[in-house]
Length: 290
Image (cartoon, rainbow, N blue to C red; front, side):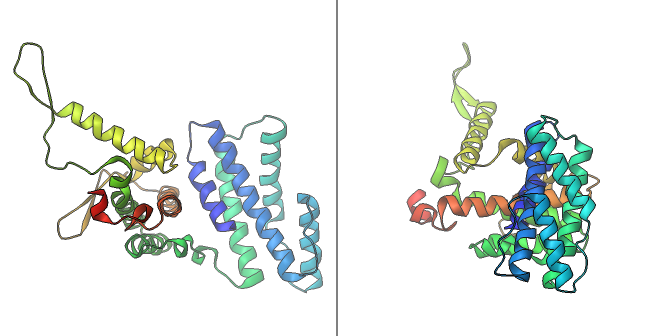
């Protein structure tokens, strides 16, 4: 759960023009830290109830770590800083700026990496939400994306993650907004005194409306999806099943690749929660919708 909260906060942290997005991001980072602290309490002393207040919880974890002869609580000042920014946003209407959100993201990631390693011997990067994905094809693309991200190959991480989400959306589109009409040049319209003819712009507008309706039906955030598209560009699958990416942002930064992988993974998990099997959305097979 802590990893999922962290990844959702990463997605919201990229809402550069949204105060609400930045607030939700900071809250997400703080809750991911707090959730992990409570898990540490349960791991070190199953008979203890985690303290309801953040400062009390921090002290409780410190005491349990000391009693167990373990390392000190890592990055204490940093997680306190995250919590302070969250409190300012919630109780003082002081909204975090982009720099503060970026700091919270870095501090939360570093803390989670250290506390998971110290307490359970786990690597934070290896904890994956991909295991929640049922569809083999989408899961394979996203697993390759995570692997590429871990190796610092940001371009491949973006390409594989985008391919996974694109395939997932393609599998469920017909069940939500009707099938794609790939071989239509335009919608026939009457233009003044001219003979009726195909209008490509109207067809393009119709397709965009289809896509928007699909995103909304699946509960996806349109602004987040547009930001994903800004970084990842367009994925095209060829007849032989391979995919190519056009319009990828250059140069790619680590935070760009992290956003794309987190966004695509969360989106595919969410799509499956909405429709069930990607190969049989709402329990109906391909031919039912086509």
